[in-house]
Image (cartoon, rainbow, N blue to C red; front, side):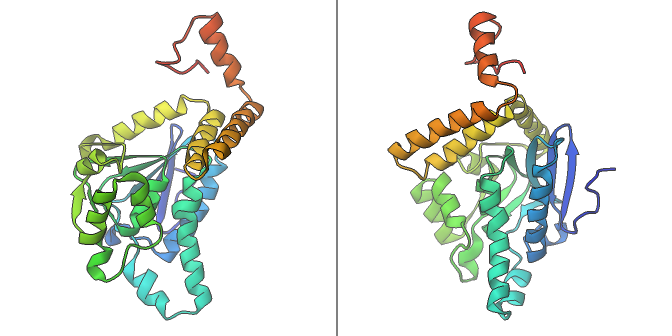
Length: 276
């Protein structure tokens, strides 16, 4: 039995062989993100961050969907008539986990898109470090079809990953596209047949777990912050991250890597990681 069994109503968590499988678990609603799910995902991210057994977080969905986006009934109709403070809290909870926490999470994150991915689901999709989709997965920005522009950070997510013309095409038409097309346009890193999706995700997670976790975190944070900074700011920030990684790294990876390459002639860094 997992230590996380039955802890949350809308999210299922299992840690196996270093991978924290986080499953949005509302299959009857195509895993639409409700206020309850958003609150529970904040708790999940806190729990996994401090779980030493969890090295990589994989975000996926139960059943035939990754997520259909925001739950229109619970997130909009039932909240619209509420107090301003309630509406603000609901929006804050959604943003907090879907991009603010997930984007700079301290552990590597992989989105495993097993099926339908619509609307608000694009925010956590792009906030994850890496993403693999099933060829058969269906993506869409359907907001235009029911009278609103894409909400939350969906447009920003598209702007950061997909070219201008393609992004606007899907935002303005509401057309759907497949996992294979998502890979071709760079929204996800790759796609495979659904039958092989879990194995492909495990293989990618294993490659990440082979790396020094302190350095891996510094590398991903450095890249993501560098997109927001000037060249001059980046130089200072990235050198600071380099120094920080060496200071915080208990296994002294830099020294190990240099020794194994220069002295022991045991590795080729262009082809493999140093032996930890």
